[in-house]
Image 1: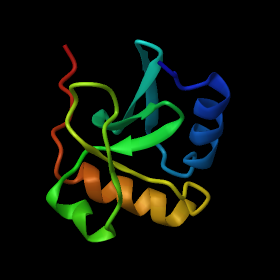
Image 2: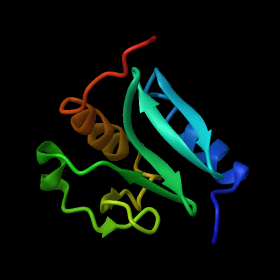
Image 3: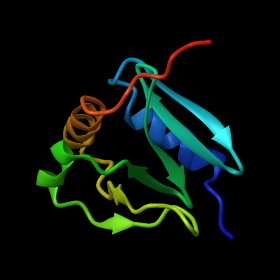
Image 4: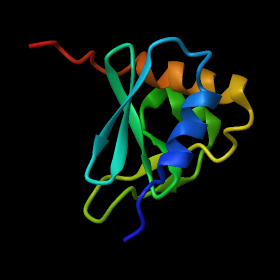
Length: 102
């Protein structure tokens, strides 16, 4: 099973640095992505996948399975287009719950 490389994670976080508040947590060789304490997606096999919500359907992103047994997620292929990727992430987070700090 492939895993996300540290180089890809670092590259992606650099790409998304304009989104103040993006954080990343390692999990089982992959990375969970949060924006403003909202879990919106993750890095799986060097792919940026985000949760499927009503608001991000309009982008017509391809659906991918992050790992066996998981629900499909949307794949943001063009992470060079920072404006679009940021817009999609912000749109996605509008519909997701904030993580409550314990």
